[in-house]
Amino acid sequence: MLREIKNVLDPGELRAIHAELGRAQWQRGGDSAGAQAAAVKNNEQLAHESEAMRAIRQIVLQAFDRHPVFFSATLPKRVFPPRVNRYSGATNAFGAHVDNAIRFAPDSGLRIRTDISCTLFLNQPEDYEGGELLIRDGFRDHAIKLAAGDAIVYTGSTVHEVLPVTGGVRLACFFWIESMVRDATARQLLFDLDTTIMRLRAAHGDDESSIALTGTYHNLLRMWAEA
Image (cartoon, rainbow, N blue to C red; front, top):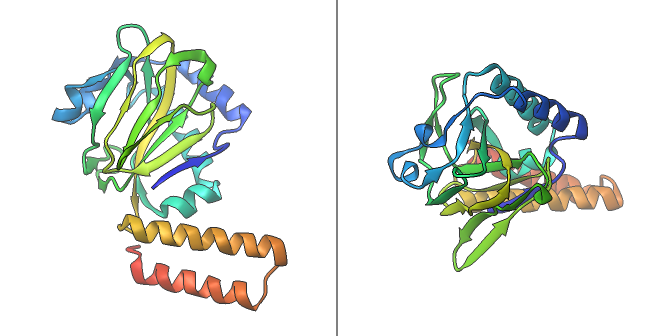
């Protein structure tokens, strides 16, 4: 799965986040990484328990909660508390790695399976040079650099990296999702079906066909989901 989610944050939310970042406390990004990732992680990260990070986390979670595409694409069961990182100057890259399969969420004490990874971009592409999120999907590489407020979600088992930032500052929020539907192929089928139902409703309203397909969607979700 590789899916762009547009307009997660509105302009007011972006302004509020940047106001919090103006008083941020930054630390070494490698301190929160696993052994393999820490060896190639060279960035800065907002202190997890800082006042600024708590405020940003609330804004981000509320924004994703109201976004229908995010819910449809990920079917979230648990979400790891979002964090923010910064790439610039000498701390400007994160080499190729795979995210840890299990993350411990300090806020809740839960262990979260990282079925899906998410990066939410916090500043505009023209604010920095380089810094693409490179996701290796089979035989293809996807270089991703989205507008502020847009997000990308992708399968947690994917090899990925952040290419060196050669000018300016790259700011992003990142977190992981444990899905109610563990199997990535099943999640994709459900998303495709949900999207088709929405298009049918938009074009024709509710009719016998859309109602039948909605029933099929929920029966498949009932079969595959771990709520």
